[in-house]
Image 1 (cartoon, rainbow, N blue to C red):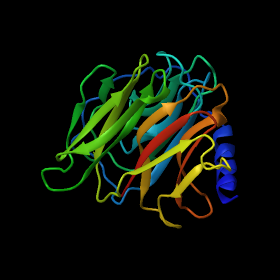
Image 2: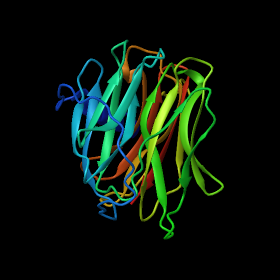
Image 3: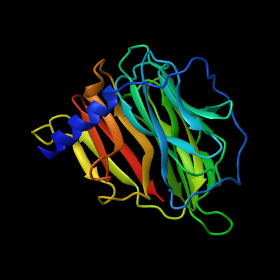
Length: 274
């Protein structure tokens, strides 16, 4: 019951849709910012919700924040489907393309550009992309999160993820379908959690509750959690059929990680930093 209440509150948030949409805001690549403003521990600055059929959502000034994906919902059934948090003309935007009209995406912006990299890009068929060391030369930890995902997610053979191996971060993926791709950025942080993995298979558990876990204690203001991986089948016109979301409970100020599907199986990965 608790999980269902959490999910109902979350879906109400997503139903708000894409207020703040603007015209234009074409995507552009920006140069790496190895130096920048920092507010450590990280604070939450802004965020956005984009809905299929809407224009780009303005998430604010790129000079004092960095934005990452925190939620994926709905249908990704062709190589033309994508969602993206990106910089254009000095501002962050959240946008996408969804031919089936059910996709939603959530993003969170944190109060730092310290060590922010340009976007790294991986497409199916490519080898893993080296995102650099997991520490700065001064020994501070770095963290990397998804800024874009897309393609035909038709089952657990489709995945995109950021992971750490032998002291470096890597952007990788798998696909037996078409057009699967991802992008990521990295920033410098003061501390991080262990990466969390949640998977949900329809009918397991039998009561069909969403799989949910608390990522942070209540009243935690200095820790932010974002997505590092997405896998599985996103093949329904109903956005409520598939969702991988990190979200903040407004009363408790705790962050929860929810994974839910009414078909096949999906999996998400998330990491918290401060």
